Image (tube, rainbow, N blue to C red; front, side, top):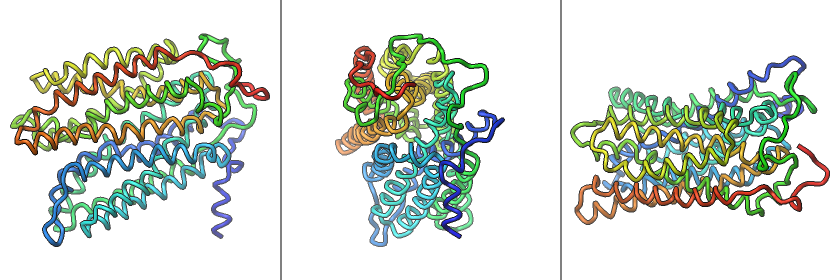
Length: 448
């Protein structure tokens, strides 16, 4: 029985029948990305986790709790890199199924860790097991969407990846309401919240598993011929994943993604505590949750908006906007003394942060072709893993230093945000150096 059930996950069982509408595919991808995007709302758990006490009265510090998010993002990148080539053969349905199992069960293990006051178990559950679910879930629909939308690859990836950015808009309020409910009813707040969320996300992700389809071999959108090459950066040839990651272009895009993500995580990972520290007495916990939700909304909308824009102005030009505008805004952000201006600038920055995620798969498709785009994308996401460690280390390390030396945490944020501005300048230089992939890297027996 189990073998028959698992055979449903085979790639050949998910090939679309004639007449299938490609517009049914993005909702399946969104079901996965809206779920795993909960990771962006992790900051709402930070203060409740810091308030937990072990049997001996022990408590965790900010850096220890921050590692939970960092480990999850690290494992996301590693698992995406390791399983990207496998995904190309196994198909998106099987990858989505395993992603759902890992992501949901990760919450269960983390719940046990919170109940036992074991940080190691939370690292294992939310960080490692859940992180594998994040990696598999993140890359599973990308190449499928690009194949369904060869005419608009930026829009296609934006449709799916905007869900990951919007996950905090659901996950933040959901977690807050669940914690309030369980606290009111005298239950173990964090463990019960983790168990409930794990179950809900597991069910929701299964919708994506059962509805995803891949196009039949040779399928093209009706009435669409292959577009004429619009830019020297849009290649008509494919590059194998084993070769692509050795090219200068891959290395430069790795820097592009890493710097963009590190800067964005500088806001996201500390969003709720940061706005409360900077506007103490004005912004409380409830308003901070709203800020996290608003950032999530712009993170999500930016993924769709900027990725769609990149179909018209090109990927390189889109990243040029991110890095030039972003560097200036990060530099001035700590000098804004009204919460309205601060929130507005932060939201614009998060729209470009999200846009960077949604644009990068199409950038890869332009440079390396669509043949191994999921596998190449998976390896590039190690840049996200690196950023997931470096960003929180910068933020939490500087904050802990200020606290240890008796200075207000609010005074640390200008230093943090100016570092993020400098990182974007590095990303700008890397993006400017991107050139077409040399002919000696092309596959000789495959064309786009």
